[in-house]
Length: 504
Image (cartoon, rainbow, N blue to C red; front, side, top):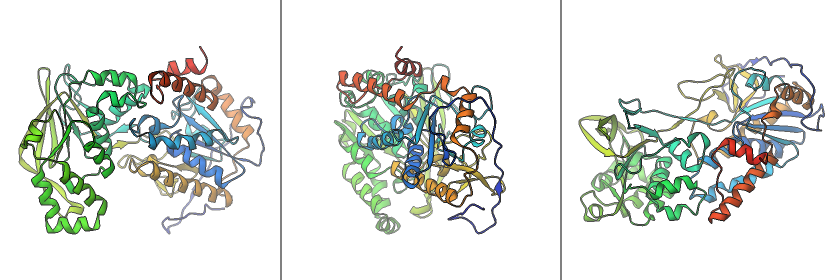
């Protein structure tokens, strides 16, 4: 029976064939081996993966779900991306705990789906050979580059650092712990980009460490921040104030940081907001108007004594595009091209002018977007940096639906939106799976016994961290955090995580 599609083009859709079931040695991972049950694999243990699983549990009674995560600890960007001073955003972890504790769900931490078929690992093709459906929800692990001269550093200068990596460093992601952010060679940091991640970085750099150390930021990060000489953070964007992509909440938080003065081109902000086009645009964009009102209330011009005499400043700069990183001994500075704007506020374009501006800094961060990476055996749109899909169903280069292969979260739609956006997106993908199961478009692969055969043959149990193992690690973090007067102290080494889980 063909897959029942919704929200798709009216053109005919063909279904790509499934993979054959592989034989292997029998070793059960679970006592539940009912042939009539359906089995779904979720690749990625972050918000998208857990919300997809939650919806499947709510909408079915006979679907077993295995969640595969390359790290021992689950929860993805909720754990490693959400700002430590935003604990309310992490409340969704309790929902994820409910999912992981469900009898129909198994957590496979410390198991990477690396895209290569080999005796001791897993690939998407191996999962597809035994699961009725495979959901890719592994997010975006890279970032977009500036592609300017000097970006990668020179001699002792590191060049432009990814804001994603800086966030991962202070949030305890193991692979980012070798980062050595320069917070002492100069009193200024430049952040390229006008989004919420950029504002998170600015807030962490300017917030007093004694405030941060009460959060779940790593102690290594607070120790480094206590030594920081950074007093000025400049956030630079290529377009104007009406084109920023951060939100009012994050800007308001900047107004509340102790002894920090917000600085901007007040004349430009006022002229953009008060022009006839600006007023019309803001009348249709009420959240943006509230944000501009907030900025106009708190920002002062660079020459204002409140700016020149401030001990700390947060400066929003507009109409500047990065051109190169210039090195002079141990000093680095960013060279920007000055821009003008063409077009209406809704589709304004930055147009280069014949002028440049240099800004010296200790550290430069780029925050211009995240990017997903491909997996072997999975279609990938290299230009858009996502897996092509229709309503969460993966499609190949000829727009054929690939049977039993789905996407959820950033790998599906690109790195945009907040956790609530990811939840709704994941629910839609789960609903598509439920629809396909109901129409018998998928669900012909195997029993859970066959799933367990494949996992045993791949020797997954050797490295797997179960949900029980993860909770053991979490209890250790809670206890370590309590001793320091904070919610938790994250373990930042995979090997140490495994030692704690295995009680070594």
